[in-house]
Length: 478
Image 1 (cartoon, rainbow, N blue to C red):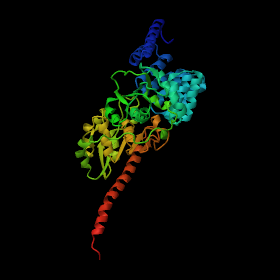
Image 2 (image 1 turned 90 degrees about the vertical axis):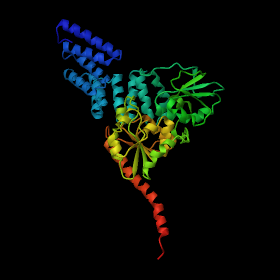
Image 3 (image 1 turned 135 degrees about the vertical axis):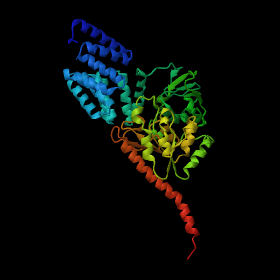
Image 4 (image 1 turned 60 degrees about the vertical axis):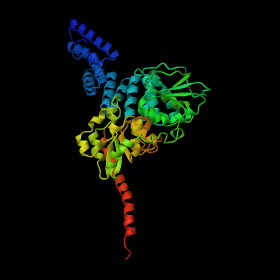
């Protein structure tokens, strides 16, 4: 900060330090305000422009962060840290090739900085180059052992390529992440040994989809020689209870139950010797509850013989990367409005507000008002011929029920969907339709729309055939 008078430099330095303290305190808005003050007092200060970019990125304003880093690089074009920061901001904007080029430049300038290799691994992950990402994360850990974020990203990359033998144990590194608030759980950590009458608590974690996926382990837990308590989100309680297993379901959020042993729910796979999907549990392992779908019948009847297709266009809006995996409702409806198909909306939450008059004009029937919990949604799914949706908990529900579902995936998808596959070994009834490049929903929707046309024509032919044969049988013989 040598571009201003001594007094201005002192004031700028104090503002800069306030901004750094605000960043450490996870208050990027206050940090940005302080950095702006410092930059007005000391124009062109590279360290301020760099820190300002960090604050902008934390505020989810990556385009402005890119501008800040680019401006700073005009003064110091050989600053490895700036190139790395620019690369990761470009990643946020899905400019992945440019991001990788920036990170390669950073490594060329300073190959011994662990954070640069970590950032490069993140970009490679978003490019679905997971084996290269694994090498980058391993290099980062070699330079700086024990990095919690790096270890977690390495574990996820291993899971992406199906390396469960190393991926499951390494995924325990998630507990070292700053964003994970640790819970005090009762008793000792369970590692898969016999219970011998001791009480085991399976502690809930993560979202609905992960819980539905993990419910496949309940039959195995029920065979343990001891009482088992399983934390479950209230909206899933009825459906999980319908599995009729000798385990006790505990509503998540009602406090911690007493137990002798505990295991986080997503740590269960590492407790069993067979870690491959096909060896865990048969599908379906969830079933609709009888009578739950009765209220849907009048709406379902409006299909009048057409193919009944449920649609969902967004997962939970509280998930940080939901913007990458969600679709605009109007785009999904436009692609799937084809002859012989009746669309039913299963969308819940704030995205359901997108179901506008335009969707009603397209003939979409909204079932969400009748879907109180996942047991209701299971009844609706069971009544569909097919569900077409983006990645969310309902996709897991369809798969666990063994119902046909096409999941429309962003270029970089959740590790559970593995890499490049069009099917899921976890859910045999599932088809995966992936973006061929980041942000390319048009190709995904075109593929889904074309496949739906073919399916609707086949459905119509199957329904016509009995009537045609009856007419032939009834025709007079010449």
